[in-house]
Image (cartoon, rainbow, N blue to C red; front, side, top):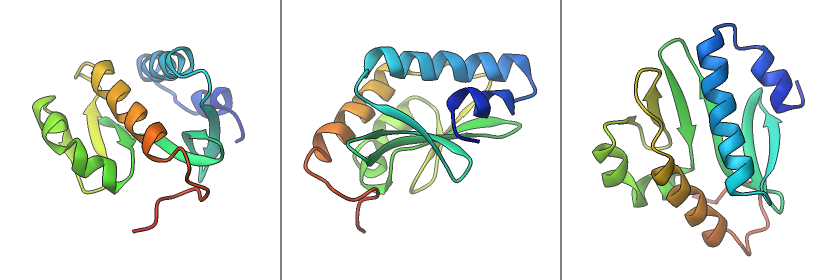
Length: 124
């Protein structure tokens, strides 16, 4: 699996596939400089070779992984959106709306914060 299309083809439920297409298309339109990649069988977006945001799906939700530093910074806004969270990701249930304003803030933060970063992941 090397492309977003190949990843999307693995999603068997049409509504879930459509939801991920909506999110990925929004990212590509809003952040045209980000590069979609598949790593560890998960779709991610990178900027100059560094991780910006990643996604995975399960039966009940979409997991959004922006890295721990970003999770800490946006912890309150993620909670305000009623998304479940761990230290390194938050979950959007399939029934919840996608908060694109929050995604925009998170992606903008990571792009700016990592603009001079040369490694894929932030160091802990």
